Image (cartoon, helix red, strand yellow):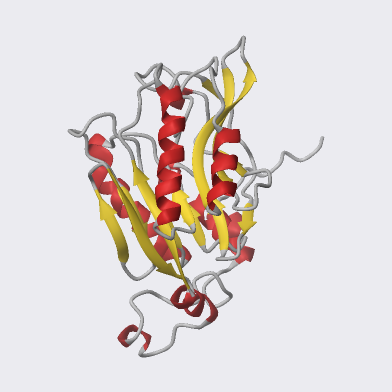
Amino acid sequence: MTFRIAVVQPISHKPGEDHNNTADAVRHIERAAAEGANFVCFPETYPGPWRMPATFDPTAAMVEAAAKHKVHVVFGTIEPISTKAAIAYNLICMAYPDGRAPARYKRTHPNGPWIYTGGTAWEFQWVPGDEFPVFDTVHGKVGLAMCSEVYMPEVSRALALRGAEIIFMPAGKDKNKLWATWRTLIWARAIENLAIVVTTQNLFHHGERGMAMVAGPEEILFESTIAGFTVVDVSLERLRTLRATRDVIGSSSEYAVKQGLLGPQWQRPEMYDLIYPRPRREAAE
C-alpha cells in the first residue's frame, strides 16, 4: 500500500519572529492535505520556539490542523522545564488525524546542555530525554528522532528494534561543512535499519543549502537542497520483505541491501556488553 509524505523545507522566521511560523505551518498542512499527503514533515524547532523563555506553544494549532485536514503532522517545539533557569526539553512531535494528544520524543543525544547555547539561533539549557518511543499509525510504525542524532546510530537502531519502519529525523539549520557526511548518514540509517528515514531543515534565506530527503534502504527516493514543498509516494512493502527474509547466496542479484538486518541472522544481543564494554565493579572489601 502506498501513502504520501509531504516534506516541507521552509524559509523560516528567525528567532524573535518565530511565532509567525505557526500560521505558515498551518497553510503548509492545508496544502499537503489537498495534495493527498498522509504525513507532513517539518524541520526541527518548526514552528518553534527557538529560545527560552518560550513565548508561544504551537502544539494546539498543529493538533487542530492535523485533525481538520486528516493528516499526521511531524513538528518541532520545546517543552519548558524552568523558565527562570531557561531549561527545556527539545521535542519532535507528531499530531494525529483524529485529534488525540500528539506523540512526543524528547531528544536523547548527545549529552547536554551545550548544543543549544551560545549560537545565533537556539538559546536554552537543554535536558536530554531517556526514552525511544515508537508510535502506531494506519500506515506503519513511526519513530521520531532529530538532527545530529543521525551521527549516533544507536538512536535509529533503538527505534528500529522497537518496530519503527518510518523514522522522521528533522534537522535544524544549514549544515555547512557537515553537509556531505550528514547526507551520507541519513541514507546509512535507512540502509542499516531497513527503514524509511525522512529529514528536512529550516532555511533562513534562499542562499542557504538545505537537506530535505526521503531515504529508503535501497535508494534515495527524494532529495532537495532548496526551499520548497514536495509530496513523495512511499510504500513499506519492499521494506517489510527485506526485514522478513534472510540473506542468501545470490540475494545481491535481487536486493540492493542485506536482508534480515534486524533479525537473528545478523543480530547478536548477547554480545552487546562486549560491543560497549563497561568497567567491572570493584570487589566488595
